[in-house]
Length: 225
Ligand code: ATP
Image 1 (tube, helix red, strand yellow):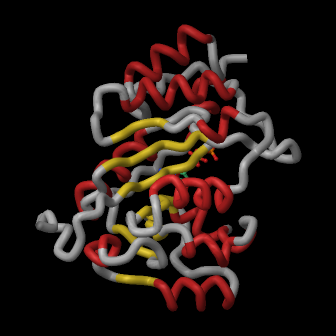
Image 2 (cartoon, protein in one colour; image 1 turned 180 degrees about the vertical axis):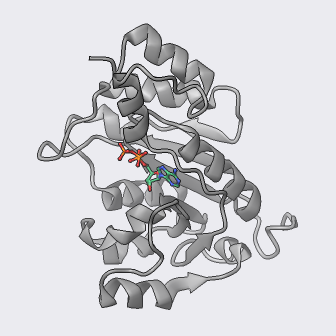
């Protein structure tokens, strides 16, 4: 018998969601909207995927191990989340599309997979490697982010977005990949940049990230030099 829940009317497949980021450090602007989204869209699990950063871009201040550790501390008490270290296990930056192709192979053809991004990432998605093929492997779920416009910059990106957008999160369980869902998540005006800047200025960040992460940052002397 297919399992029937408020979010799952046609399939017994689980809906897994992946959330990539530099997480330098992870903060409530990541965690709170994603938790709200998971409840809204019926995600069974959210898997954090900390990224390596390409050598030509500004490098994170924390090491890959520190970023991974902070991600693990942030979700240690929340069964919704887990952390997948695969992109940090290799020295070179991974393209998101390659990670998604591997995840699709691991989970089989039928399992719905969602990849979560913030509005700022949607606005630059047309610069991602093989961005037009991302929906072959997963759905894309977009969280609003304060300060970032809704209007997409290129007609090509806008056309792609309009062609795949769905208004109902239930659609995400009805096929394994291929939809874009614009989620109505709480707006939190928090960035890792702001946290690093506040730390460098000797300011308190306790309202911006989980206390276990803050304690770890303090113990490692991160973002102080
Ligand atoms: P930085 O300030 O160093 O650029 P960041 O705070 O944007 O970092 P990232 O690790 O780069 O954090 O972001 C990972 C993902 O989380 C991206 O898809 C980004 O759009 C999203 N994101 C980050 N902060 C927020 C926020 N406050 N609201 C919604 N989405 C967010």
